[in-house]
Image (cartoon, rainbow, N blue to C red; front, side, top):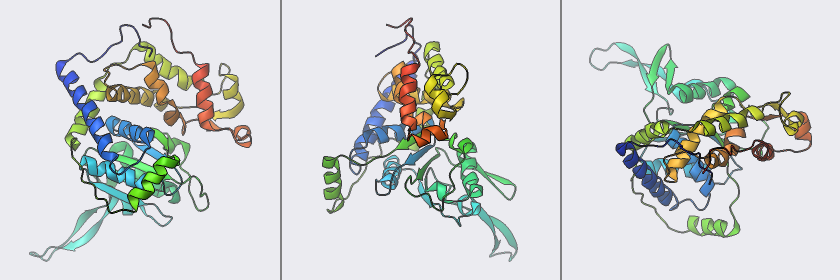
Length: 344
């Protein structure tokens, strides 16, 4: 593994101890999840990275691949409040955020407006089929994602921490959908693809789900721990060479005079500055999950696809040739050289 020379890392004793707790906690969470979730190791790792960085992620997969079960199980393992919102064409913003209702005081008999919180007032939100609801309702959730608060009738209500949104999209049903605009997609840290299991894992799922099995979970990590881990992730320093590599990947994805030829040919718009931000933040969390207090180039490369998938917009020529964004990212990783100077 390529490690930048004189790479800055955590040095404070308390931070190093917390880093050890974080790795042990992640291992425990993964172990607990596998009591119900078969396989999907990469998906689980990306969901954990989202949680450890305080990010929100988009999960894309056909129906029946345990997207809801995965997020619900994580909430149970962490002992956090979970809410699932089924997005439909008639869903209103108030159905998400809550609304004010007139309520009569039993003692005085006076009527007053009382705020009734919506399902967004939870710790982990599953926004199921977010592309099935109109943009106005999508925007209500996106405000909560970005600001961790909602505004109703001019009043602002702060959401409880920790707070995460995992939104799902069904890639095989397009009729009656409202695709998220690119600017809104950019607010998601990762686009996580969940695919069919291998044959042995699928057999294990069938046997497990058709038998009388009940799982009890150990709550080795609490919501307070998650908040502490998120703060620790942001304290992990990053070598200048690693940061420049993350920025170079994003800049190379943008069409222009100096862009690689395949970018000019197939890409309409490249990744925004949020891409290198999330590469670095995700790289920090990945390093700590693997027991390292420093970020490597390999950390950046490992999460490049989920970071770039929804940020690189392909043109008509690419779509006509059935070019996938993952293919573009693979070529991008080959085209942008990993810095070699100062490596050990």
